[in-house]
Length: 134
Image (cartoon, rainbow, N blue to C red; front, side):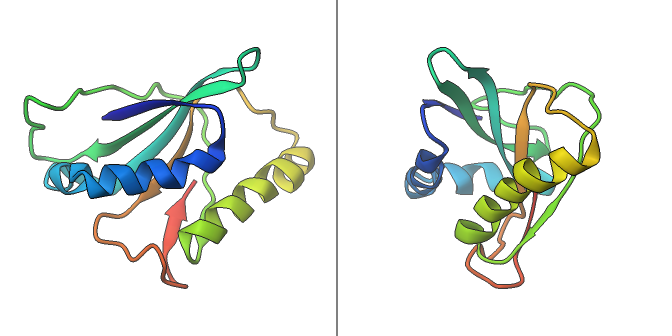
């Protein structure tokens, strides 16, 4: 798990790039489960306009090594969406549609908890066929 306090979701791609360049994604890949890498927004502070952003993995069958922290994501009712296409544009546009279209039409409200995105290990995030689960 790699953790950073953010003040803008615009900072997330740069954080992923830094984590990749520092070798963290490679070091996590061996222990990842089917969902692969997970990006988590949590602990939203509306007063300070900050939130925590965490990069981790779904734990696979292999035990994580001693350098990893294991956190359990609490059970909840989750809506799952597919963002298909290059991550840079598909994820942003899908989040926009979730908040401007899906929430108003569905009758559901954001519970104030975590928001997650999953990225398959080895996925080509620039491919028009790439699927990110939100």
